[in-house]
Length: 400
Image (cartoon, rainbow, N blue to C red; front, side, top):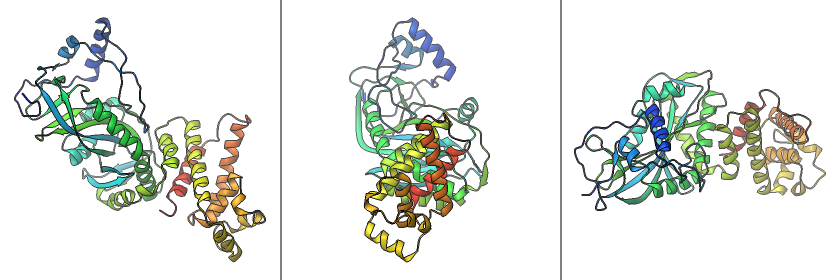
């Protein structure tokens, strides 16, 4: 029998969180827990070796999973769903908007809606959570959500996997598709920082506030070669309170279109620390990740400038950074080593959106970073993480 074909079966629900905890304890007593590999569910990077719990056949049976013999083969294509909560935004309706794009040769689709399940269904035809209301309540989530589907064209095959008895036309596997997880996590690692940065930058610009997009769930969702849905997922949750701005979902369509269009033009090197900061709650770490993003982008842009053109522009007296650039004019521009001077030079030549106030802000942020690095203080001043995020978003999106 091919497991990719539809079959009737006994209806067995996916275990709840409390049931899963009970089964973990039972598995420990049964002495069947060992270390294996797991899909990293909250990070943008792929990690080769992570701990995972694997259950005995007895526990798998208790959870409603069973094998049916070596002749049973399941073939499916998969997409990795990544759900992000958008704190600071409140949608006034249940409409879902979506868009498709490609970054670093990775295809993806993205949808935004007040509910994660609705956004996921718009992308792949199935939801993320069986009981979304309970999930949101237990995790303290309010929504709305952006769901990103990372696409793989590979057809994966497993022999005699554990599957849960479900309603007709739906197959649930118990971490059977490790190869699919591995490939899709690598695709996510390659493309996700740029996607997340573009979404955060454009939505923050649309709402007028720096926003954090925090990963709250991931799921591996696929379809068999016969078109039957297959679910094999991992979930992690995180949230924090904010003040929200009310908007109709349809009004964000231009923002979503713009975010998808500019995502390929962000640099991965500067996008990675920015994305890491968005998933970080510690004020100290957020400040340093955002500033690192600023530093990398400044150095990357500086090395690509035509310094001769920059000198000509300086002599004409144009550009928002003219006054600052004049003070360093006597040095050869291509030999500038100081980060603050490189920032000014990049503002003059490449970042027309950067203002005099932004340059002064950069000097304050850099001083705070240097004070911490030299041991003069242990924490950045209050609000500096948000200010660094705002400036990083402006710089990273300049000229896109």
